[in-house]
Length: 142
Image (cartoon, rainbow, N blue to C red; front, top):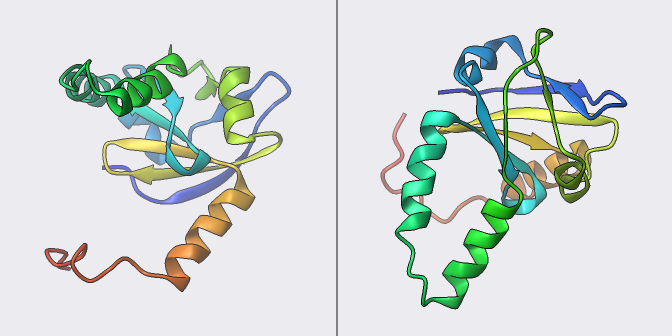
């Protein structure tokens, strides 16, 4: 599972270096798409297949399900690391996540996340200020 957070820059062609600790996680290819809270999700292909199965199981007759599938799929882009361990982020996804010059590359269960640094700081501060409710963490053990 990838974990940690790493600050990087986006070059003028929209490429971001994937940190060395995350490279093996996405070495077979990846899917970039819109994520929650204004970040981008980066799924390795195997994890994306599991996500697709869940999305395909959503009811076509449910308006919210259709809207979420559109949100998630229409932004999706399949890519691979280049020879310098960079990933090219399409302009539409960069605009969605407000990735201009700097980016936080963060690990999460089954995915990586790409964040605008100010959004990342705001999100982390919000969790510190208002931690998850106790019932959400009821089965969380160290």
